[in-house]
Amino acid sequence: MASGLPDYVASAKPVPQENRMPWFKSTAQTYAGIMLWFVFWQDVPVGQNINPAAGEFSAFAGGTLSQGLGVALFGLILAALICHFLFYLVPGMLGLKTGLPLYIVGTSTYGVNGGFLMPGFLMGVLQFGWLAVNAYFSAMLLAGTFGLAANSPAHLAIGVIWAVVAAFVGLKGIQYVAKVATFLPLIPLVILAVLLVATIGGIGSFDPQAAVQAGASKVVELETGTLQAGPALSTLGVIGVICAYVVGFFATAGAAGCDFGMNNRDAKDVQLGGLVGIALATIVAGGVSLIAVAGAQGLGKAGGDLAVLRTSMLMGPILTPQVAKIFMFLLAIAAFPPACFSSLIAANSFKTTLPKVNPFITCGLGTAGSIALVVSGYAGDAAGVFTIIGASFGPVCGAMAADYLLAGKKWAGPRAGFNPAGWISWIIGFAVGAFNFIPGKPFVMPCPPVAAFIVGFVLYLLLAKAGMESRVLEMPTGDAAPKPAAE
Image 1: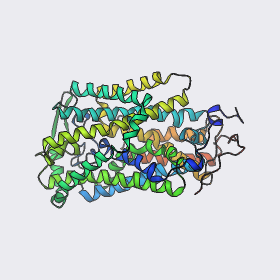
Image 2: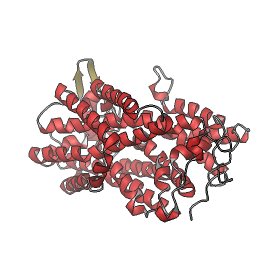
Image 3: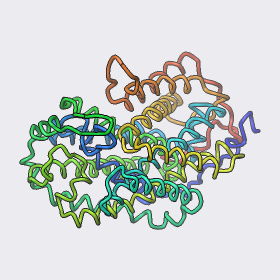
Image 4: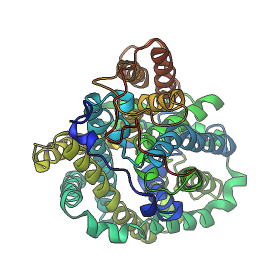
């Protein structure tokens, strides 16, 4: 080891400047593909479903449209900007300035020993949550094209097969999928454009109160009992739920901005890649989804049940059942590469953090976890899964931002052992982000992923000022960090 550094840090080589790419060939298109994933945008009007088995109905009367389309769009725009400026920008700049990936850059915040677990190993584990959600909803659309019900044995069986195949391809053959992954995001973009044209004429006639009344009177009969939506959200409640949903979905992708930034040429690439690929793509995908639901209700194309708020479930009434089946099949196919990429990220994480363990074993165990989430139906609670992901990576992004600012807007360099400031801020930040899962909680935590970010940021600052950062180790070059790329 060099200067007390473990081999995985000492041997890290920054991406040379001549190998960097412009934002429109790397960052923007990759992030846009994530935000155009139908699993994300179809539930923006729902916000939080009443139950995974009845995911088309919101847990709140009227969903995120209860205060009108304008309030929902404002919340979406705010969430998109939070994703770019708070969760992505600092990791992206750290990647740019060091040319190094997240699991190396993260050693400044969590230490060279702690960096194995955070964010490296955690990033890999959480990818299987993404895989489960992808498999569940892709299988639901595929089953729907053949008239098979959601949560039926056929739906869950397709989901299991989907998860296994995606994990295998991600582990062994992602290079073949990557050849077509650049073009597949065009499928949901075209479908969103069709839905926009078909429904935009109805937004002037949309009545939020009608949606609220329909949601409040909707009774969902399940084997476990009867469910009914809670009261409509307030204006701040709508904004908070949308921010929690969007930011929770994006949290791990934000931290991965480090891996995109290390391939960018300058700060302008980092900024434009995020503004276009993250902020703009989020606003377009989520905005069209909101407009489609509101417009369908305004035009009387909501299928007779105004409580149904999941956009994909309204494609039949908006268009025709035949076109809807084609669109559902295409959306499912377009979701396969993201499932493979999730598996690839997990495999790379495990290969780095557990180099002596066969990746087929680690990824096999992770896939088994994904299958359990699919079969149990919990993967159908996308908002719940995204909340856990946000709780996990909210404090990571917050602490990294604080570390970056304290170091003078640069990478401080790897720190010895387990950096106490990073780990304490993460533990408390995660507890804040996951607070709403506590039974009998005395209050509801507003926007948990953002709250977790703020706690991680503030605690790291305070703990660092109190001297609870471990010492910085020198890189083999003699510097704390490689020479930064041009800004």
